[in-house]
Length: 220
Ligand code: ADP
Ligand code: MG
Image (spheres, rainbow, N blue to C red):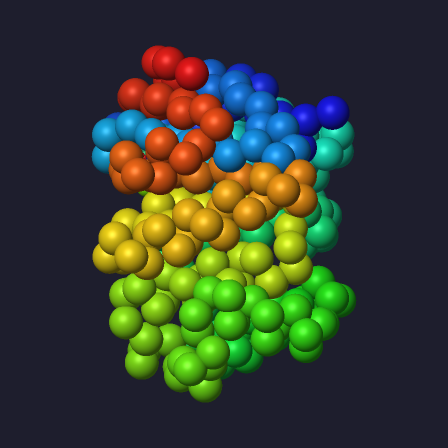
């Protein structure tokens, strides 16, 4: 069974009389232990695809299944439950609560999932090199630290599925390398990882690259 299956996803946006077809029949699967990168020009639909796959957005047509469970066409409260159980998510807009410190953000994520584990929390902050910034608030973090804290939140519960939208967009080469190590470590524990990225370095580490153009898969 695939960790994630998306079948024929369509998503249209309307602004006034204008219609944008952000997704036009996108299908993909991600297996346990696999890293899949989605690449493509700006506006090709990468973020829309990841939003639909995590159930944060609802596609106009198509189906998403997570570990064999249908996610699409369910009430938001059920989608949220499935999301909390299966997904770790890094969004472009960031996933940190501004009034919580880096450490509190990660702890809160664990609490939300009913999986508070202080040892894992300490291990995660240490392995992602954030221990010394644990008590900093998001506004006090550099770009690279923000990216690491966001990933720590997404990895808080060691989720079966990590979905990350351009997780290394604003980090230096050294930080990107370290983030990549965290993605690669997930292979060992049979965790699935789906990333949207412009980074060649990151794409090289993926098992597969899916190319999007104008809301369609053109290769992969
Ligand atoms: P990418 O992440 O590859 O840059 P997006 O998924 O953000 O692409 O966008 C795909 C297309 O959908 C673009 O034309 C974008 O302008 C449009 N789009 C995305 N989100 C919205 C929205 N909430 N409302 C209207 N148009 C949107
Ligand atoms: Mg995007």
